[in-house]
Image (cartoon, rainbow, N blue to C red; front, side, top):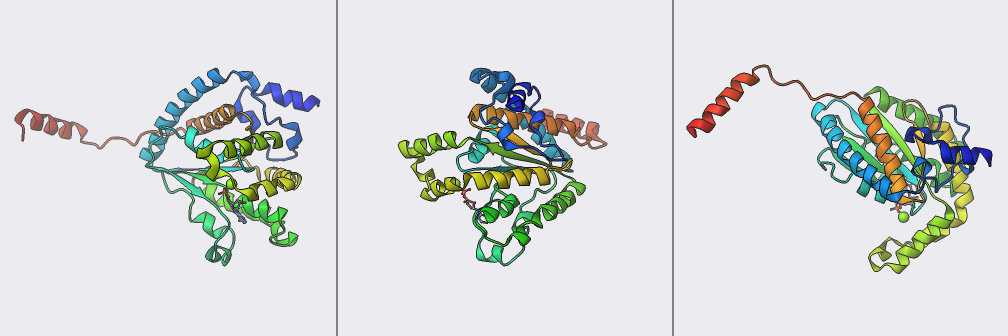
Length: 289
Ligand code: AMP
Ligand code: MG
């Protein structure tokens, strides 16, 4: 209880939601409706998000122009936790050129014929790109574990395999951020209801998702294990309080902006004879040729 209050109140820097590399976190100590120093002030949060959106827009442009490094964002969370919402709101205004979304569904036959990282590796970002994973290779230690889709001796090896895979990406110049969108089961019911009561949202309701709720506890155990075993310096996990959509977006935008700033990017230097070209172009405008 004490720890819960601590986490609820102390977070001034969104990066404090980071899962330490040594692991050991308990999800029950993280409140999904935490709004920390924003104290439920939605308007203040929304204004800040607008600022961050603009910063993100110019930082992404620099990443693209520099064309050296890559950014991979992993979004995981239970149904309705807001993976799609983050993609829509956090990246609002960002130039779609250079940003891609990869959604991972139930694997197809060709995907199942390969190792589980095969389909993932193909979608990782190229130089200068941001790729957002809507679900990811973590499904292979989450849904796969909860539903015994492979035997335990197979999924248990995957934590180390995933860490090694992410280390490879990081060593080759990919910055990786992983976000677990933490919602409460009570908030999930509200969101399912909203999907049923809003005609425009009906399509999002999948009766199968309701069945998954029965496995909530098993999912939380699987998430806790994944977070503790695979949060590293080169690919950290963040537990994002996601019962309030505005705060969820704010936390993620803020961590992304901080991370991009730390990359200390710069625009490539201009060509040597910029003066000559400038003069030529000015002459063209004057002579109309
Ligand atoms: P959605 O994200 O709502 O479109 O749903 C995608 C579904 O695909 C979810 O139920 C995931 O659990 C499922 N899924 C994604 N990856 C895997 C995987 N590797 N194995 C089994 N199911 C998966
Ligand atoms: Mg779904």
